[in-house]
Image (cartoon, rainbow, N blue to C red; front, side):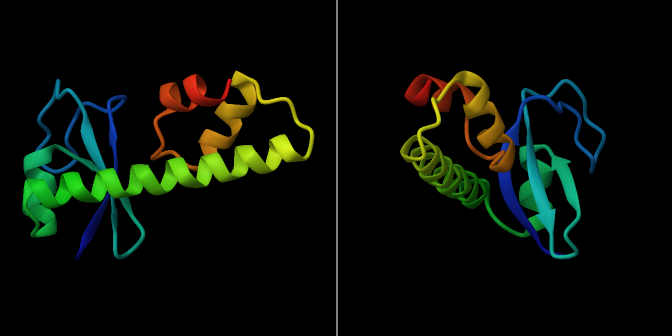
Length: 109
């Protein structure tokens, strides 16, 4: 089974692989079977066959793509005459969870 890193998630602090708790954050990963799991950084690297640096690069790439997609959607809404508020940013963020919500709110609301 292969895994791809999606984002860091600080709301889940327990590794689904080894059960370690009180982690600062976990890596949300998607398997080739479309299953979502939360791994600590070490387990993410072990289970994906990638280095920690490769995992970090995947997370950054996914975040950048999500920010771009969120920005495109928010720009589209603004052009349609929608006033961009924090609530609108939160709704768009729900579509692209890899994006960092505080950054989006600072940029758009």
